[in-house]
Image (tube, rainbow, N blue to C red):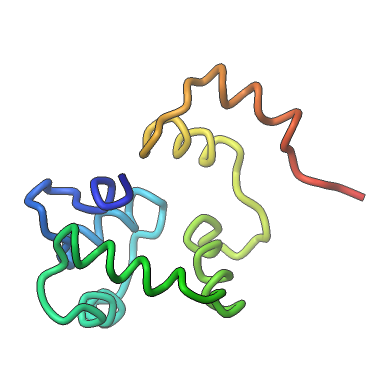
Length: 117
């Protein structure tokens, strides 16, 4: 399902425009072309579903370095405030991938809310 979310134009290939639109959907609007080009160049050719799975599997073989994990969170926290807005997270959970219902989202906060103190 991750492939389907990223393949914005549904042509079966993830390209630079797909990546740009995916970042925009997550609130990161000004991604540099160089950054997108570097992502595309990680593949040996067009990124279809099979290539995507292979690349994804290679990434999962070992633990990602801390900077990679932090980079993933920065996509959700582009201003670097150290938190994710509840409304933004609710929107993602109810509009992307395996969509949650608003009721499911509200029901999860008390059980899995942030730890404080």
